[in-house]
Length: 595
Image 1: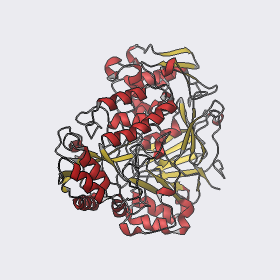
Image 2: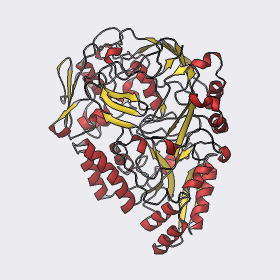
Image 3: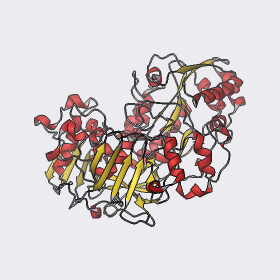
Image 4: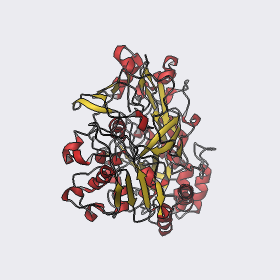
């Protein structure tokens, strides 16, 4: 998938990777994978990977330049090859991880993530001198801009630009980006609360006492607001150069590059921004002189070109083209590709949701969890090098304060515990239930459906499998009055906290919404509100993990699903290529061309 947005589910499509927050609807369902016979190789499985460390940086950490990757050299031309062009360049319209990744080359925000070492990141000030200062219990956040930060024309970036950038996100033509800060400043229905700045009206609770200082005053505490500002959607737009709708195609750069040429859906070339100063930027390396981008290349084409490593493709890489199933065994087993492979588990949460309006007995839901054939699903999708088997709702790769638990014994019995399931069913209101399982009708889901059906029927559960058209899959399962008992869905964190997951997947129940289980428990709702407003971010993160386990123990609204593992390649003359563990996409910040 190459889409990720709040208004849709995280998806796993066969041709590409994605999301920022969550992914847009598309080829949803189980991840694409290698054949079950992929077998062992020299590449490690997901279990061998250590989750990234994400901590809060200091003012000193916020100083530039970025920490260079080993062996870095400056100069040269690098080529990025992928399937899709970028639909948005206006930061306010960006909620897709591919667009956000491109935005790192052009745009800057108040905060961002500094790579300290592989797998080690800090939230730092980007345009700001630090990651922000909270007061009033987390209701008020103050940021001070660095000296010497400029737009591509050399004019200074000011607090007025920051205020304007947030205010313009309320305008009617902004339809796609994140909504957190807007809602925190006004109301859930923020566009009714404020029309945007173009008619001359300002938001009084964004203050700019001088050109370097901006103060946000929220209606309630938000201890992780500085993480929200690190989202690409909150990058800064120049007030003096704002062209409204036209800005989405003609952005003004504050980052290391400017757009030199762009042939839509075919190619793009970036040149250096002469007014970007690496000394002010702790995040972006800006090492190549020129970036070239080619679009229209499917994952198989990209993989074949990078395997061949011929001519100009030696200095090529991909942002998100995952190795397709028919090439995975070759890529994993070829020792000559070892230093050009990039492997990373998915940072998203994937689930099989129970429809709580229909499957009302918790013992039946628990029985299905115990009988769940995790290992068999993993094998059907290519084995442990294609798929990891998580046991928690929150993903260990994108949750600060993560603590594992294994409520249903999946680590000890990944193939399922049929006897325990039978015991729970015998204690339930219906020892021989029928479950209507809806699935996305695509090749990867057919064998998974068979595995699920066989395992549950061994426990005494009749499974009625209902294939759904991939084009309308989400439309069908997101209806509150759907006729299904169990179905796949997912979501991705917008920053490394349960605050961007739990209140979404267990939030308001509505047609087209993300609460696919229809969970509406007063105790859970009250606890989520309490955690969201906790001014102690460490305590809040710990509370999200506690709630994760509590929900599964006391309600069991879902089965935690398997998670995809990405495998990608880069050319032999590309250095610094890594998959960002939060975005699940290759970051441009450390890329350089080997001499």
